[in-house]
Image (tube, rainbow, N blue to C red; front, side, top):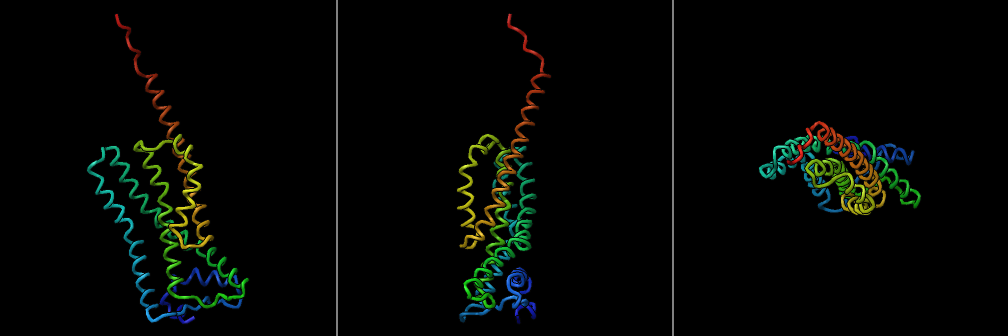
Length: 234
C-alpha cells in the first residue's frame, strides 16, 4: 500500500502487515488505510503524538510522582521507591515491546480471520481506528506490566503480605478482567490477551511475596535464637 511503501506509518503498520499476511495470502502487502472523513488524517496525527508522548514520558511521570511522595517516606521506603521507579520504567517499555512484537499480531490476525470468515475482507481499514487500536493496546500493555512493581512495593512497605495476596486471588480474577477491559480497546480478544499476562504477573508477585515471607521468618527466628535469654526477675 502507499502508506507502507512511503514509510510514513511503516512502524505502526508492521504488526498489521504481518497479521494480514499470515491470515490472507492475497494481501501480502498489508491493508490499506483510508481516511473516511475530512479530519481523519489530522486525528491520526494527534493520536500518534498523544499516545507516543505518554509512552516516551512514562518513566519521567513515574519519577515525578515518586518525588511527590518521597518526603513523606522513611529511609527504607525511599530505597524501595527508587528501585521501583527504575524497574517500573523498564517493565513499561518491555510491555510495549511485548505487545508490539507478539500480542498485536495475534489480535490483528484474529480480527482479520474473523472478518474474512464473515466475507467482509480485511484489506481496507479506517486509519484513525487502526492507529487508535494499536496505540491504546500498546499503552495498556505497558501499564499492565507495572502490576508486579506496584504489588511488590506494597509488600515491602508493609501494606500487603503473602497471606493477604493469597486470600485476594479469587477477587483478583474478576478485577483483572475489568482492568483489562478498561486498558484495552473494546473487544474480547485484546481483553483476554492482556488479562493472561496480568494474571501471570499476579501469581509471580504472590510467589515472590511468599519467598520474602519465609526469608523474614527465618531471619526473625535466627535473631531470636542468637539473642541472650532474659534473666528471671528476682
